Image (tube, one colour):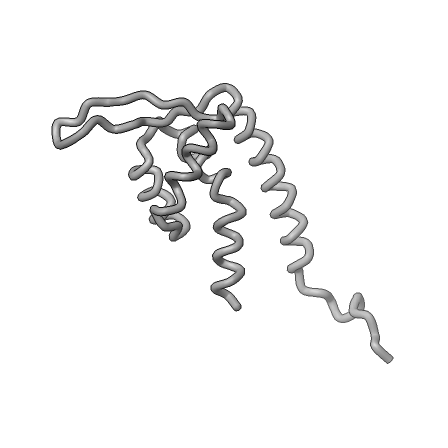
Length: 116
């Protein structure tokens, strides 16, 4: 069961994490995927469709940077809408975490419902 909740949690926070990574620095998809892999163990395959969707939603824009070791890299940067999405999602995440943490707090003996 831990694997199921782990996968679902990662899927649920992936957009938020990508927005946060890009708020720190403009980056290309493989570098974003590497950051996510190091931080939360997210696989590389999920990032490319997500980046296309975020671009379609107007949250990121792209530009090409020449590379001395191969083809040009497509870099992503947050748009104004992307920064707004990050702010809203960060707020929702923090509210959610507080609510879940409250539910996970141990119940004191006096507060437990007596099934008798």
